[in-house]
Image (cartoon, rainbow, N blue to C red; front, side, top):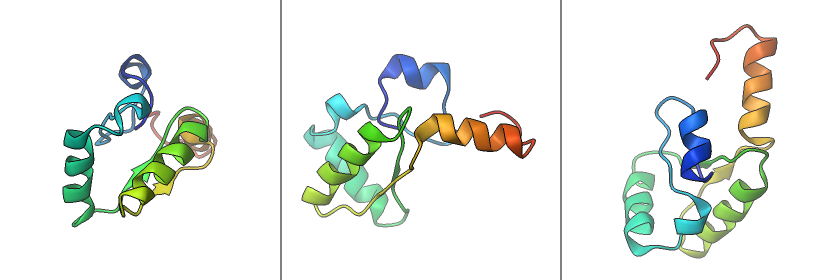
Length: 88
């Protein structure tokens, strides 16, 4: 989740990890993501999809494959509401 910490605290997908876009270039975060990407698929998400798209582009520069969730957390919330899933 590449939203800022305040946004993440207000609403987050269970099991997601917060690394704000503004911190994404830090070596410790990149190393963590590189290690995790060896065994897990990496998805990026934000409020509407714009920051997550930028985050995926940054990650690709470091040879880390990721997928940006189009529509962001707002789209996930709508999907959950329409399909009567527990809110995230």
